[in-house]
Length: 104
Image (cartoon, rainbow, N blue to C red; front, side, top):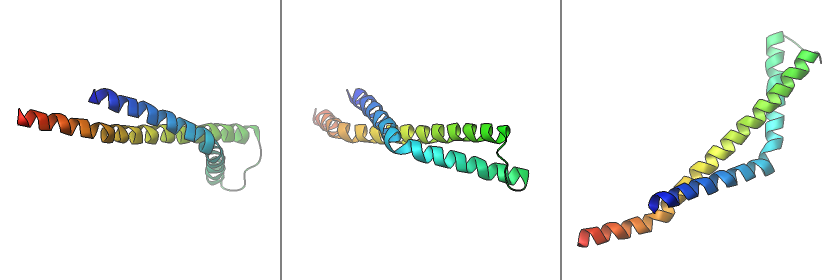
């Protein structure tokens, strides 16, 4: 039973992390991905970046990477917090069973 509680907490936490990403994570992922790509291209090209096809494609790829990174972090942190909550919820039952084993 304890294992099922922890697994359920992990799934609930990951789901909540995904929902938090959908509400609060898409815009920062978009912003940081595009900004980071432009800064990287500026450093690689040694000056201002012209809006060529390559630069635009690189910015789109940077946006996708930024959004995916924020999504991964949100889901993993949500899953970890859910797992921790699963352990906290199952702790009293585990303590009761140990206490009963010690008395028996």
